[in-house]
Length: 272
Image 1 (cartoon, rainbow, N blue to C red):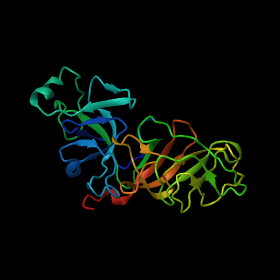
Image 2: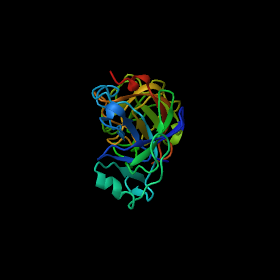
Image 3: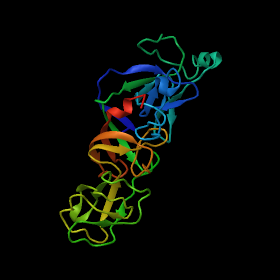
């Protein structure tokens, strides 16, 4: 599974230039137009302000291919990439290396400009995104409970990386009595004492393992990594966050955790 992928699209994919000096990756969420400050796409990146309001950056799509004839593989993100160029010489040089394949749509098949094929997104587009800790490839941590709760009303762990927001944290039981069970946090903002809104159905024993994701079902706040290749599982969202409408969170497969979501309407308002 790539960083992000569209699982329910509204539009057919289109070909778009890559901004000069910018590298885009297959599986990356990108922005375009005025909010990208150029003619083409670049990484959407992390939100700045609430819903990205500080920079007025809006999501445009998810990269699904490049027009490089010989692909450039990136070992960090385990995917292909391409980098925009500006000068005439650098564009013409692409004819021989890496070569390019003809894009479709409004652009000439003989245009050597680096391009990305993009799944265009809007507020109805459903997207699957990988969950990692802060950076792509850094797996979500598993935490051991340190205090018994015979009511299932409390999980106590070592400190999570960042302070969570109220009603914006999912708690997942990894093993023993509450294995496979999800609960949403209540009005708690502790990194160590996790209070489920609805209690766990079975006793929480010392040593029971849990995972956490700073998300909620429905509308919630979320943050991406710096190049918008994954969702940060436990970020600082005191000031900067995207608004997402989350449909599913899967924390079961170690190293393969993901969320299915759509961007909330507010993220598409370029004048906010």
